[in-house]
Length: 317
Image (cartoon, rainbow, N blue to C red; front, side, top):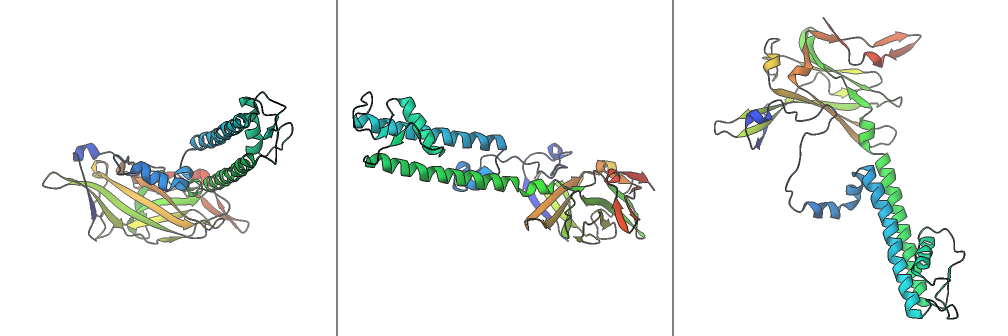
């Protein structure tokens, strides 16, 4: 299979020892000078908010309530000013007991948060105030719906579930099923297990062309099985045979190699029915030659018992 390449700038030496994907699955990439960056974020504002940090979301929500209350406070104060209500309790008031800016702000807060009118209330004969209150009520409902939907979407974010599906910290190269294989372990740490998913492995290298251009190259690693059931931890197996990009590896040269094995596991969460993905990667220093994974599954009393304290442990063959 021919590798897929991506041309990059800079020197190949600056890319050595740099991860393409971190162990936690995050891409080691920073975007710069994106055309119309802020425009794209504003057009898809819902996704932008869902992907923002909690502190940013809470700050924006607090500001949305405070600023809208302040805006309508200013409008109510202007209505009272134009109607001659300020400092004139004998006048027919648009909003009862609103004589100051502070009173207008408190009335706007009562309307915004629907706490119920008490000392201050609207006069039905003032059409302008009726229209403004109606607009504020609709805007308040819109903000509430947006806050609730974003909060639910963020709490049900696929990334949180992906953190409960893990790969072993290290991969191993050992004899498996009569042949030399690259092995890594994958497991689901929640009780509502994933029924089935699809795993994929790719070899990523930085190469330099004769013209001095640096290329990022991907090559697929054929797996013994791409469909995995995670009722118990499973093994991802790539056989080092002719045609494999790793066939020429040896124990002596492994430490000097400069590549990265990227592994992705794509599945549907059975509790929410959402498509999700977990990723990780292995540098040559994280591949242990001549080791095997410690057995962590045993059968007792009619049940399979998985000891996850042994999930990352390896031992010499």
